[in-house]
Amino acid sequence: MTYTWDAVPTPVGLVVAVFDGSALVSVHLTETDPLWEIERVSRLLFETPVHEPGAAHELARQVDEYFAGTRRSFDLNLDWRLTGSGFTRAALQAITEIPYGETISYGAIAGLAGRPRAARAVGSACRTSPFSLVVPVHRVVRSDGSVGEYGSTPDIKKFLIDLERQTLEAASAA
Image 1: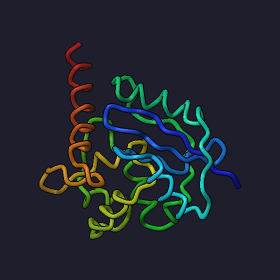
Image 2: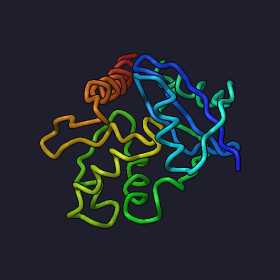
Image 3: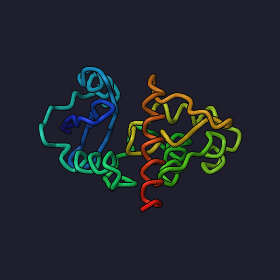
């Protein structure tokens, strides 16, 4: 099997994407050298992806639309292999149902994923998600409404939440 990778610039850093054919295996926002992310994913896949410029063309188009405020969800073929098959996957799939511009607590996602007392496990699922941005883990917040973490960059999480809310406000004002 040959995995490929490409990177897409965004207003909040690079989106580094790993593909298996046309399926997205991993997408991660980073403010550092993309090769750090490729090394991390290589350890999980037991194979080093090959850089293929242009591999992320469709992802790049959708990311550009998202940041322009014209896209509210991503329509990409996701390969869930790095999430396992248990609660982590169930939590991440529940997160895909959070409407654009809205937030929901870790505990509420735990309930939707079938384990109402597993709020901390939802936090772990968000932290280890292989689909940053594409699966909107940034929409999951603490029960007190505070933003919480987004990797090590809660400022990016706040930026994404604010971007979505401002886009909705602008659309309703028009």
